[in-house]
Image (cartoon, rainbow, N blue to C red; front, top):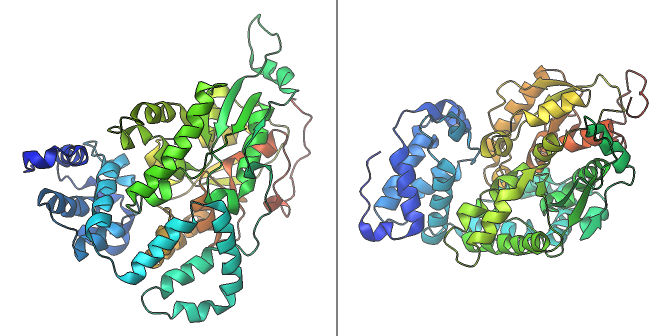
Length: 465
């Protein structure tokens, strides 16, 4: 794509990066075939190619964002399916993130929109505030029909109430900083992984930091608890560092750059303290949406003299939990089951991080029958705060996703992202769990409560058989 940015514009590193991305695009249109919003709406401006034209015109012309640009960029899920499809390697994620920052700085949204976005930014990244908000949502649930009729924001407030869980999980040990040592029996267990003449019991096999996160730590604390048990059982010490919090992803994708960078810097500092102190082999993440952002810290802070090097170090050792488990190897299962698992690969997992085979391979190794979901590359409609800010489109995508999942008749749905678990879970009665919950159960952890009604179809086998 030909561009005509002025030299003074390209002096801005963000603009220079976007100009390079724009020049990579060759207008081929392959991206339109896999874009969820184009699939639903059929509008060229609701495809990546159409949005690229709008963004180019806005940035190149030095214009404030227009209402039309905002409408179509807001409708983008940032699912990044277009990046998987693109034959030219257009880094659409960085371009649309820049566009959102430009919109936030130059466009005066209606007051109701500004207030709603401000509330989301002030609540979601803070677990204690989020917990209070969910309790308030429970009180407000009976008034949903009235709330839905409010002008301009009623549909979005109703969507917030719909997404709130009926029962808020209790706090658990993952709610605060701490260190979880490797299971003492892991020395014996880890010998199973050794081959050849060297069969001496291994010591600790690794030390990792686990992202506590924000929304997930309130909605599904069992995800991280299962991850800690799984890692400890495999000889890995897990630390939840003091000072770590939201990774910044939620507000980053709302264009609130300063807010997002503030969250990210605090978390980077917490991890660097562990890396420079006791040391870390990896930073393990159980929410793939967060993982995509953390792995991009190096780019986000590339021009920050105080954080460029630290951010790159953090990005360099960040791994999804299934990515890490695939590297160290999974213990033989102690539960023999023929449960059928529909694996839903979150967009941030398959498109954002290009992790596609590892979770399914681990589940198969653990003894599950794994089935792919038809149209698995199409987003479920969660996308951070998208299912609140664009509830109608999100609901259509959720219903489409659920219909495709139910076509394979699974016993369980597995995924690696809290947003997907919440979104899909609102559309089906099929239990939806994190991949690590199933891996933990199969290798000796407790049976997930969501599977209480499912009976094992074969007798469990002895440990390490």
